[in-house]
Image (cartoon, rainbow, N blue to C red; front, side):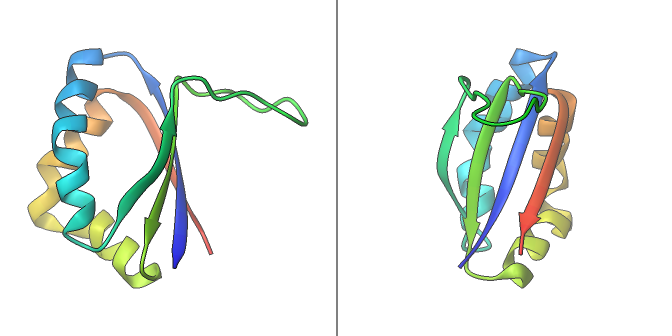
Length: 93
């Protein structure tokens, strides 16, 4: 099991809503899932930039995470997320 941290700063809530409708199925295609997500992240040490939304994703392995990120059939789904504002996804491992 490997995890990825996603942070989003939302400027287009409609695009984010459309993304959320498709995100679960897109993740599942490559064995991924949303472990937890929140719009109420907070710092407990240091002074990091706090995103509007944050999520912890899981995948069976790094190859599955990369396959999800690079799947050409999911390009439109990833575009919805990117059109929602800024997003960063970091593979933890």
